[in-house]
Image (tube, rainbow, N blue to C red; front, side, top):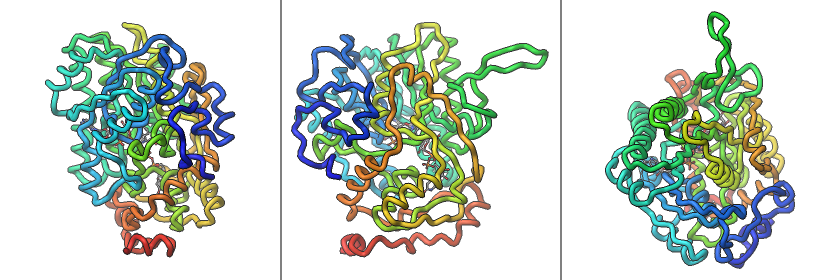
Length: 459
Ligand code: NAD
Ligand code: USQ
């Protein structure tokens, strides 16, 4: 299926430009306004209210397509990123499978394609506090979307240096953001990307509610409190610590905050990022940053047996990257009122078991699943039932796992397969000594790509 890389003219409705037939019907409620040059006078989804939005972490896998989408919908978007993710690629000796352009080339390409300007600021949110305050004062944003964190659980578990970096960067950045909004004296709505694993998996005894849980305290008192935190990695723990910070600053300083507990994101391109190769989104396939479905699709496409950890009995929540952007827009359009407690929504489309996903990809690609020792300290099997009622009530009709869309990803993999380094595919971070010992037999050099691919890599 050549749906994404056929020549697309610039002025096309979203639903036409990026629509396998399944996606079109699945997205009956999604906005169908044109991308790029034909942007309407009205703002997002026909609303007349255009917003000024700062996107922290706007160079990343979720942040870049979200920035383009918000810009395409008529908002004034400003990106902040310190390029730490690109630097971690250099540290790990890895790179995005897709050749991502520099931030400067990206925003220039977007200006050419859409006519819209997205200023880019290289600021470290966790360290360059004064610059952050100054930017917020100058821009007077309506909303600040906060993606700017170290987001890989494996990388956060690699060693004490990466554990400490992840905590300092993520918690420091979130605390700085709250302080900066207060110091800048701007009533900006903070929209933060949290994660499903703040809840722990299978600890609710039923459907995971959205953020808060009814409890009976000792003495029979009824209360509604933040869902107990039960993280599965240092990275996930930082999202739990963030949640406490949002709660405190909302109570103390009346900040308006929305925390989005997002599942595992899959896919690569969106209707905006396919418009020009310089706009292409990043694709992580390595053992630290690659997430499960994109990894399986990449492996299947390259003829590498799928790396299923343990029994593959882990159930996780999933969402397509196009819906990440749409959810952020919905969250921005529906801010909590001043004085309201932190708004929390579960940002997921569906839940799936890892071995079932492996079976789908294996059937599609003809590549077998390889059950390898689990590098992670996690339950071998878990059930997962998650409410996503709030986004559904706001009109989200999410994209679900679809082999048509799988083909979109495998086509990208085929296009850029010569950039793949097979040594980066096996897990390279282990949760504790026991898991490291169990995985000691995994040899990164044992991974071979299909012959036609291998030749290119070696040349
Ligand atoms: P990413 O690593 O691709 O992007 C994060 C961006 O933030 C990078 O460009 C990085 O350079 C930047 N950044 C990090 N620390 C910074 C700092 N101190 N100052 C300025 N910029 C900084 O990650 P992503 O996949 O786009 O994830 C974005 C957010 O969404 C993260 O907070 C992550 O926890 C959350 N999330 C991601 C997923 C997923 O599957 N990718 C799922 C759930 C939640
Ligand atoms: N897994 C495999 N094989 C692989 C990779 C992963 O079996 O090759 C398994 C893992 O053991 C795990 C599950 O797949 O049980 C998900 O792993 P993942 O790497 O896709 O996702 P995770 O580490 O949870 O982190 C990702 C993002 C993170 C985000 C989180 C959302 O990297 O930023 O917060 O998804 S959630 O998992 O819902 O909390």
